[in-house]
Structure formats: C-alpha cells, structure tokens
Image 1 (cartoon, helix red, strand yellow):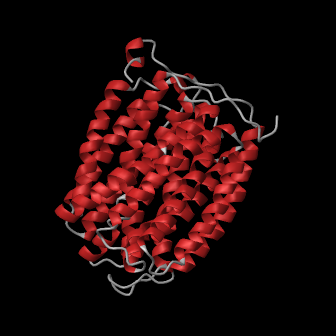
Image 2 (cartoon, rainbow, N blue to C red):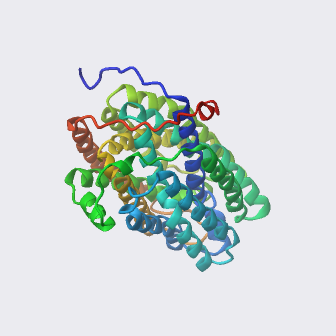
Image 3 (cartoon, rainbow, N blue to C red):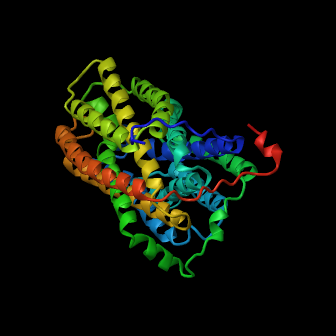
Length: 429
C-alpha cells in the first residue's frame, strides 16, 4: 500500500477520551503560562523599562531552565509511574507560576520564570510519554491534534481573558488565574487518571545516568532530537515579539490585542481536529511538507507588514497559527514513534529539553536581531527575522524527512493500552 493510502482511524475507548481531556487541560495551563509572556510583552517592557534583549532573556529563562530540568530528569523518567511524575512536577509548576504573580522587579521575574521552567518544562515530555503508552501510532495524530488544541484554547480563552484582567488589575493577575485553574486540574489528575506503569515491566539500566547516555547515543534518536530542536528554533524566534510588533509597527491598539489573539486561537481550535485526522489518514511527512511551505510564505508576508487594517493583521495571524499547528501535529506524531517502549520517558524528556533550550536560545537570538530604540518606537529588522526563520524551516524539513524514513523502516512496536477494569471510571465522561 502506498504512503498516500487512506486508513480507517481506530476509535478511542472511553478511558482514552478521558486521558486525552486530562492531557489537553494540563497542556492548556502550561502553554498558557509560557504563551502569556508574549501578549504581556509590551506591558512588561514598558512597566519595567526592559530592552528587547532583556525581555528575550526573561522569555528564555523559562525555556533554558526547562531544558536543563528535562535533561536532569531524563534518566529517571522511565523508573517511576508516569502519573506520579506528572503530579509532582505539576505542583512545582503551580508554585513557580504563583511566584511569577508576586514578583515586583526584573530580577525576581527572572528567578520566578526559572523555577516555573524547572517544573513546567518536564510536563510536556511526561504527557508525550503517556500519550505514547496509551495510544498506538495510528491514533497519535488525532491525539496530538486534541492536545495541541490547548495551544489554540490558550489564545481563545486564556490570553484574551488574561489580557483583560491584566488591563484592569495589572500584568501579574493572569499568573494568579493560571494558578487557580492548574490546582483544579491537579485534583482531577489525582482522582481520575489511573497509574501508568506498564513500562516498568521492561528491563531498565540500574544507573539512571547510564540510561540517559544510552538514549542519547542512539543515532536514530539524535535525528529526532535535532528535528525537534529546529522546529523550536524557528518558532520561538518570532513569537515573543508578537504584541510589541502589532502595537508599535502595525498600529494595533491595546484594546484590539485580546481580540486579535482570540480570533487566531479560534482558527487553531477549528483546524486542529482536522489536521489530526489528516495526519492519521495520510502520510505524515507529506502533510508536514505542505504545511512548511505554506508557513514560509505566511511568515514572509507577516514580517514585512507595514501599518495595516485590523482585518489584514488578523488574517495573517490566523494563517500563521494554522501553519504552525499543521507542522507540529504530524512532526510530533512521527517523533513519538522513534523510541522503544523502555526508552520513551527518557527520549521524551531529552526531546522536550532540547526543544525548550532551542526555544530559549531562539528568543535570545531574536532579541539580538530585532531592535527597538525605545519602548514606544517600532521594531526594526523584523523582516530579517523572517528570512532567518525560512532558512531554518528548510533545514527542519530535511530532518523531519529523515525521521519519517526511520519510522517507516521501524518494525511495529507493541501497543501498551492501560485501561481500568472498573467500569465506573469508563462511565465518567
């Protein structure tokens, strides 16, 4: 059968649907915590008199600390019940986000973002390992589509609401909103998610650091790591400057900013299930390639925009969001198929770490490329940033192609489907 053949999707069980909802809600809060820095960027830079370089450091503090944390925990990721790991790191994330809300100066902000990153950055890799444990490859495109809807939901609900309360209560208020929501989700995880420990039945190295090293030294895994890092490098270069570019270059008002993010998020929410189904029905790399070329065109359009009507800016943001998500879903589904069952936790931790660290480095590089003479002047050299992102996207396309070849050559791995035997939990959704 050719790569383009259409496959009949495998339906989800009730417990799998519950697990998807839990993972999506968890990702919603973690993504929102990171994403909120971009729309708050203009207010933060003006409130604390930050330069573009300083704000880039504030954004990268989370990403770099998340990367370090992921590497430190990678060797231990397959030695514990994944539910317990998720609950532990989610508590740390809640505490770190709370400290972001009570910060009063730049140094405190950096420290709070580091703490949040140390815990929050690992949650994504744990969620990916849980996804790989509970869902076969034939379902992961749809699962990734639903989980990544947290990205769109953060823009439809989280960011507009956060900006609204920020305009009335101060830029710290959105962090308190995230803390309250995350605490409720933690309770749901504790009560509803069953233990996820099937991977503990497989042989493990006695030494956690040896497990880490044996994961890193595998050539196929390193190709996946590099592909993921390149994805982040391109995306994170532009993201932190979204609000500042919209307000200072495109003449979008602060009152219009929440609506801009909301409409872009709605576009993501609508397209994610469709992309997930396409990813499970057609060749994942082909879908990724189409999305990459589409995104490159939109990025060049966006980075060369001059003061424009609100509807034009909104349209470009929606198209750009669709392009970003359409690349992420098939690429992450492919990458999740690379590791063996006993390596999934370590692989996902390392993969997430490199993703976060690449994003942190990208934010710093973006802050060096983009120039702003003062906190109220237009951003300069934003068009240069667009060309850099296009170049990185081309290299990333080559690496994801190599990942796709490796996955197709890989024998089908055993499907681990941990479902509760008690029917009461199945009836909970």
